[in-house]
Image (cartoon, rainbow, N blue to C red; front, side, top):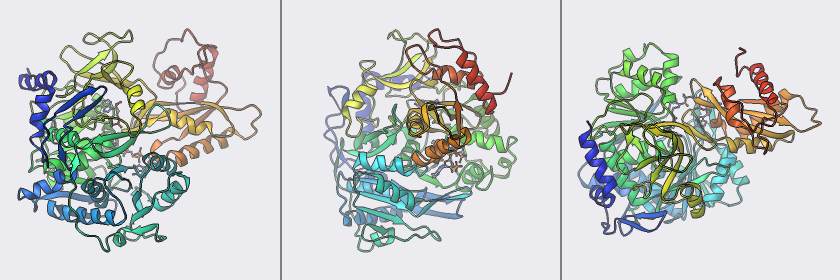
Length: 633
Ligand code: COA
Ligand code: AMP
């Protein structure tokens, strides 16, 4: 079984340099690397250190050089606005090369950081690729984050320029970006020198020159601009993600490894060839969007779909089937929550039967645990393989998957399949020894990580080392826990830090707690992710008030909910803050979050032997029942 896969996998682990040297032959280099892996300074590894290339060249120019300029690179479809358009590789390069010139006109140079805070429109992709063209480092910020989060990213990245749009559209709501940007700029210590704003039709906003100029004004004198030569280990982008504290971590991506690895995955993991249409229904603000809306499909030279809509409500639960059918999509990649949303609204698949999905061959799910019910429902409906695969912002591509382009393996419901070539995945038990098959523990990956993974954190080498590489020497700690079974299948069971996963969006409960603690009536609080049928997890806050607070509990709860929305953003989906009398703690003062979560999820729990007062758990139960989180027995 899976002999072909095993052979390739084994080679990648036994001789990673040979394996990734061969893969590197598939991309364009201004100067081909002769040094494949520098291991002299662990845990800081360098792939292709003497190679010279350019991300944008590999995404666009390389294909045009090979006579494929008239092929469709990008399909934009926005059921929210009714807009649709297609761009050939040539057309996309023309837009990118002009905007690259516009960035240069505004003083953006190689190595400068550019924040991109935009909705799912082609101009966002153009901005990303234009940065890559001139060697600027982009940092895309998801539109569902509030000003405060945007400000922290401006400060940490010390961005020179910000690219935004007048608005984004959410079902039933227009997200006005300008006030959010204004507030972020006001809050940030670091001052960006210019904002370029794309005016969406009918939603134009007033700008104050010279600090703010429109997308069109920025193009006024812009010249076509060529790709600059970049060293393989220079950075392509920073993508901030939730960490174990409220301070987001700037995951960086180096250029050469990113191109090689992502291009390799398109065929080997996703079985996508150049003539295929590929769709990743995510957002460019997340890693899935970076890697699989923009970069990997363009490196591969296939066609990618940019979808400004939702699985339901834009306008109905047939939105995904319509896109697949209209554009003859071969494979779709999205989060399980999208399919749970469709299943909830159209359990019998009535919308599905209206469309022709004869070209559709596979569905890939990631971002959160894919529950077997949803996978089976999707399989029954679509009659194609549904593949759960596991990865992280840190890695930018799958750590475990069914590598369908190498050899299709059997599905085990609930498992994210086997380690992908390049990743030597192990389980380490709490006694620091390697686990046997089926034994639970921390999931780690033996160093060095393959190309395309994060070589460090932005301006934070020490944090990189301490956070990820120190607890288990010689291994990368994923902060996921689970086991590997006797067939080598990986089972991801939970996070080991404070990260929760809400509708496939990664959030730190610690960051939400930091916001709640700022409320003047809150003495202490705990935020936990409780199980939710649609979003996988939802955050709830338990707050204990300071003595003598006179405000009523309902007002305080509402204020807390609003504070999280204002400070983190609507993406936190934080709607419940419950005032309780006391929090259960160990005798040493540690809040028993795990036990509260089990109570809230109606999961059996053992009374923690170190609890200071067991009666508190009954109080919490009553509070959860009163607030409809828990049903009374
Ligand atoms: N800009 C501004 N606000 C945004 C936003 C964006 N780009 N994306 C989401 N939001 C807002 C939503 O409007 C919502 O606001 P509300 O509280 O005013 O209703 C809030 O953030 C929470 O959004 P979400 O968690 O996405 O919930 P939802 O109910 O709007 O949609 C799903 C639920 C399942 C339909 C949606 O999450 C989805 O399509 N997910 C699957 C794909 C995906 O994006 N995966 C992520 C990475 S792979
Ligand atoms: P992000 O960095 O936002 O992509 O989130 C990464 C985290 O999402 C992982 O560490 C996991 O906790 C979770 N995750 C991603 N894919 C899966 C999967 N297929 N199964 C279970 N959890 C997943």
